[in-house]
Length: 476
Image (cartoon, rainbow, N blue to C red):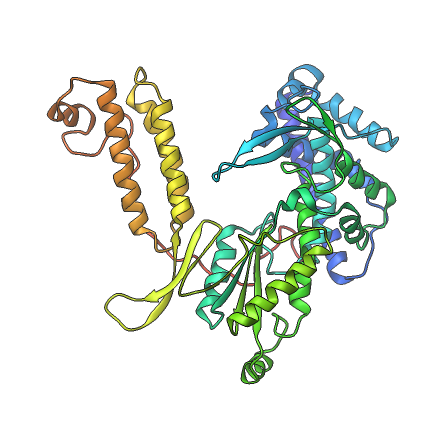
């Protein structure tokens, strides 16, 4: 075992080495779109890549969760030792004896009452997947198009929402709201590996990718099941592989007449001839297609997209794939985007608000936290948990027309905390409650902190970055 300072220094040096190699891989992939990389296996087993992969697995919240072998990241540190663990893993990868273990299934309840299947891999498998991602991500990032935002470095949901806002403000008034049915569960392995082979010529890496795809699932009923399609949701490598699969949609829209590659003059010519122009905005498996044309054009494009996704073994959900007009509004990534008349004028503008579902979700978390926190603890304990939750939610929805939602949430939180205080002190009067817990006013506070007030958060407008979003790898 090594001490903490030596481990941190080794991790820093490893990160510098990995960044340098990633920069070269990204540059080579960008300079030659048809290049296949044939010696990547040694990088996956490189000590620096494994060290950085371990650091990312260790910092992740899931480090406290064990896979089918029962080992957590803390167990590796305390019992096995990080250095010995990584040396053993490296030897297994190099002599080709490494085999992924089945993922542990856990069913997570969704807001609509259904269940989402989550696959929890072992710590050793997570480290190898993280190392593979460090190697493969810079290569495929050179191919991914600007319309894709989900699970990509330096990109976030605000960029996707800003792009949808920008398009709907500029004549793209019809929107196809896409919903892919069980995307992570139904991706065709053969079709996905064919797309990976376009860039990866190292068969040893392809065998590892296939092994992770085919690793079985140990269900909650303790039954072992095979994986013949899909990528385990919750896996470190799954977001990258899903983007590789779904980029087939990005490329189809990019190449089609009327797509983003069409010049301004050609777009104007198409509109004069009654032809549609369109742009795609995709965040992982959530996407919307903005159409400058008619509803019939949007309906036709929906059918075309269904055919494109079928090549990857994917299907659109007929009930959730909708065609809407911007005046009716749409919900995208937790935001409600709609055009309506500005108060006091006759001009119409597109606005972005927190969606009702997002507001109900945070209100449900506040209510659950107040119920979960026992009345035997001080008020400060409740405020710490609520403040962390509210600050994060308000920071996310601050770049939009969110003041009304913030004020509504502020009123709701106040009521929940006051009810908690009255349960804690059942005989207290309003006068005494305000004196002891509100400083003589109306807003709850403890001796050390005040309840975070969403109504005081000032909203702003997110800076639209378009296609000028940098990568983590500096240009040479």
